[in-house]
Length: 262
Image 1 (cartoon, one colour):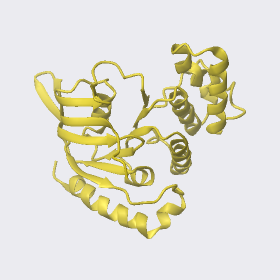
Image 2 (spheres, helix red, strand yellow):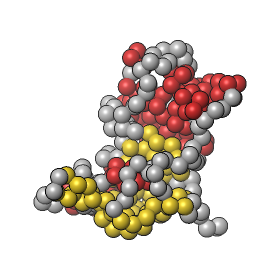
Image 3 (cartoon, helix red, strand yellow):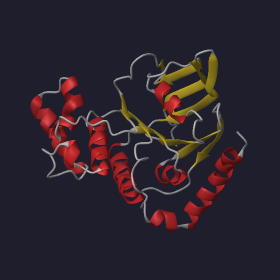
Image 4 (cartoon, rainbow, N blue to C red):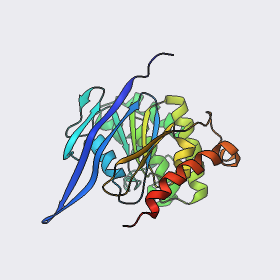
């Protein structure tokens, strides 16, 4: 079996924020690698620095120490062009229709109109948004708005996709439906995904590997390989013994951090 290509490297990463005269260490000594076409989830207690790590990966936050590399190049400044970012808030533009929201990244990149329109049509079909092309965000459900935000990122065909709790504010039914859609999209295009979540079930359902963080300052406690076959049925999966085994193992590790005194 050929060696897997490393896309992302985090080495001895640390970030300390300043609050007046007070220093708050968000993460310390964080090191791991992410491979090409891999889906990696990061979980941990609230405030352990999950989103801070993602923001350092995307060039939105500068590390206090250590290094982030994408394809052997250090990440500094703005998000590299090959990287797409889906935020926790849907961030759709209220004055643009569904189609024009999805098209915005293509417009900024100067993609010719015929190609832009083709990609937007394909994205709308892929996300099940047919019939809502001319709808404005105020008329859409939260799940639909999040699909628009996701397709706006995917339509520019990023090689690496950073996702910061994108489904955290949604109800369980909507979230599970979007899990199925995301897995189908990932299976079709295989971008490298780094997915931050506080939901252990979500991480197990989606990921190839899960990075479990300690309490703040966040350190890597465990990097766990999820031994569940793909493709995955997001409903039936949770009824299997294999899923229960994965959940039990990871809940024990994560629970140690959740139960630790502040």
